[in-house]
Image (cartoon, rainbow, N blue to C red; front, side, top):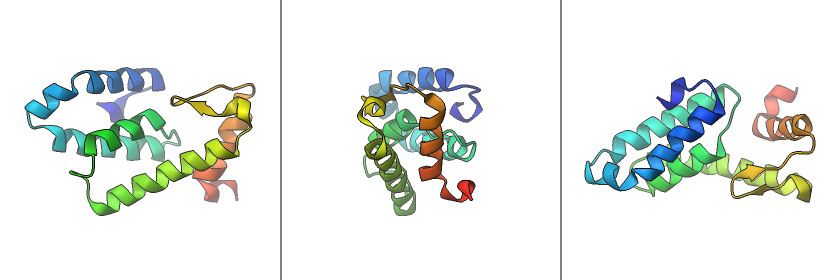
Length: 123
């Protein structure tokens, strides 16, 4: 369902549902299925050019080193590093706090993010 979301707000709403019912998902023994779906959704959103830090955070929390392949974990670790690099390179007023970024000029911040996450697109 996350892959079919049409906007970030609906995706964030679904992420909240996943967090809220995490204990139930674990008791139902469906975490491997959910983690696979979250990984697919993260990949789909990233291919659309919309990387999502909240989705990435949820995915890493739910996986907790148990369900994803080593290759997938390495890819996610690279994505986390890219977000960290972007956050470190932004001026203090733009830095993320608790997963959100304050923007005085959202386009310049977004372009900086894309240049770091997708360096081939800038050429």
